[in-house]
Amino acid sequence: MNIIPLWLHKLSSPPVFYRFAGALRPWFLWSALILGAAALYGGLVLAPPDYQQGDAFRIIFIHVPCAWMSLFAYFCMAVAALVAMVWRIKLAEVIAMECAPIGAAFTLITLITGSLWGKPMWGTWWTWDARLTSELVLLFLYLGVIGLFNAIEDRRRGARAASLLALVGIVNLPIVHYSVLWWNTLHQGQTVNLIGQSKIAPAMLWPLLLMVLATHLYFVASLLARARVGLLAVEGGKQWARELIAEKADA
Amino acid sequence: MSLATAIRSDLRQTSPPRGTHACRALLRRELLLAWRRRSDVLFPVLYALIVVTLFPFALGPEDALLTRISGGVLLVTVLLAMLPNLESMFRGDLEDGSLEQMLLAPQPLALLVLVRVLTHWATTTLPLIVVMPLLALLLRLPIEVLPVLLIALLLATPLLALMGAILSALTAGTRRSAILLALMLLPLAVPVVIFAAGAVAAAQSGLPYLAPLLWLAAALILALVLAPFACAAALRIAVET
Image (spheres, rainbow over the protein chains, first blue to last red):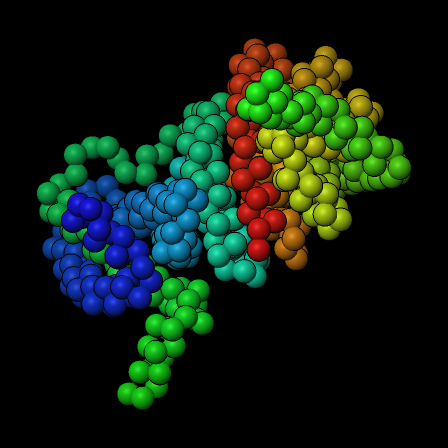
């Protein structure tokens, strides 16, 4: 067998992945924290105030990366769900299910920061703008996946059912997005661009991109940590998990 | 006759009955079940009547206001009235073991599921559409908009039933599945409600309303083809232990 498929096969075994994730997690976590701190310094201190929005625009450095991550996490969940449905790999089921709470958290942060940003800029906490509505629907998709997973007692069966729901959701997501756009333009001609597509100044761009990188790294770190716990929960009765717990108890 | 041809002809004779037979048997069973519990048909209708009666009390009885909101209120009412029935679509089958028989049947499960969902729609949701003129009258929907509302409902409700069937199969055998089903159906129902209500609103303000109806029809055709397969996969997950 080729070396890369062989390695992937080995990695999909729960005990191997458990150790692999444990070794990798600190690297991702610390680089995410350092890059995030640098991006925050760049965004909150170094970047000049916006000529129109003043200092209020600075929430962009949290809002936009989280909005991207809310979609990216759903995409990751759907890919893992597809792998789980087709090849029935236990690890893929765990990863798909652990993506959901992280993605839901990013979606919630996006909605909250967006609403905080909307109050001074548009004069309202909430408006039924197409993007806001799509993001809210995305939150409901996440909550549905989490709710279904928790409602079924057997973890593996729950993971597979919720994986199917995630796949239905990813078919639905573009339909929701475009129908909401259509609905909004039908009713009112309001087009508030969340990010003015005008060229963003370099002093504002680099902290934004750095923060995007930091949130991706944080997502991976958080996913690795959650997947380890999820694997232990699924494999609790297995030999390797018992040995591991015994080791921890001794130490 | 050689042994091989004998076996082959024997196999041919005992080949499973064709799909149409199974569909007919399933259809008869479902209709019979619905007929034995015919008072159940009235519950969604009563529910819709109650909701529609409450709106004028909450918003005031002005005709102009009621006319403006009637299309949207009726659509949401139908959607809500469908929910309790969607939730229990496969529960009885799962409890008495007939779901396992459907899974074991030589006919494709997706085909049986399609028959099951369409019969379920016809016995639980079609009565709602039949009483819709009365409800529309109560909410002062203009009479010339009524056909558009009925067509929108005839396209939107089977679509919701097909998507609800997937979710119902996923939640089959779980507790407190009612609120879970509502939570999962909301994202799927958003485009349907937008297009159905969009058609009614367009007709009400004298705009062309064909485009949203065609979108609904396209989505219905897509769901008729794809949803039974997703539903069958969900049922397999629900039954395996």
